[in-house]
Structure formats: structure tokens, C-alpha cells
Length: 141
Image (tube, rainbow, N blue to C red; front, side, top):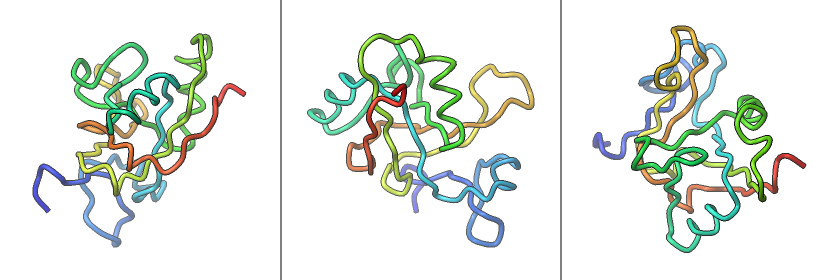
């Protein structure tokens, strides 16, 4: 597969090539598992019309940040509590199949984070709406 479409999600040792995955992710056995993104419902509606999602994180676009912030299933509740708890308006939780993304998915600590910080998946390109396998209602309840 060419570098442009190469996925970089870590896989279990012995079950495929490991690229850019942290040792912690390998110990957890993460391999092409679904990844998640918390989005403003209005941003998701815009993506449906455009065919791709280009918001990196709250208040920042893919063009500004360089990637779309994602989380694993055990990480998104912490992201929600830290960054989205008081956001006005409805949110949605996007569940994404990394095999359908088409852009590089790199598991790495957030930019500028100190050594030892937990690694998160980042999508280095627009997120096609076809890669979203489920849209969950506002995770704040």
C-alpha cells in the first residue's frame, strides 16, 4: 500500500505490521479497533453535506491542527469531561472504522505533551463520512 493511504494503527504482535504505535497500545492489543471523535452536532451535519469531516477539535479545523483528534473507547469519556462538559449545544460521538479512513492514522501523544503522556489516535486527513460506522447521541446524556 502506498504511503498516502497507509494506515498506522498498531496491531497485536504477530498479527501484522506495527507502525508508529506506542508500546502501551501494543500491550493493550489494540488492532484496527474503532476509534471515536466527539463533535458538535452542527459540524457533523455540515460534514454529511460535504462528504467529509474536517474539524480537528473544539474550535480548530484540520487545516489549523494538521490532524483530527480521535480517542479509543476507554479514552473519550476523559476527553468529554476535560474539554466538552460545558460546551453549549448538542454533541454527537462519532464511531469510526480506521480501515475506512483512507488517511494515515497515527497513535501518538498530543503535540507538546510531556514524555509519558497517554497516546491517542490522530487522523492525518479529512474523515470521510463513510468511515463513520455509528453516530451516538450527545454523550453528556
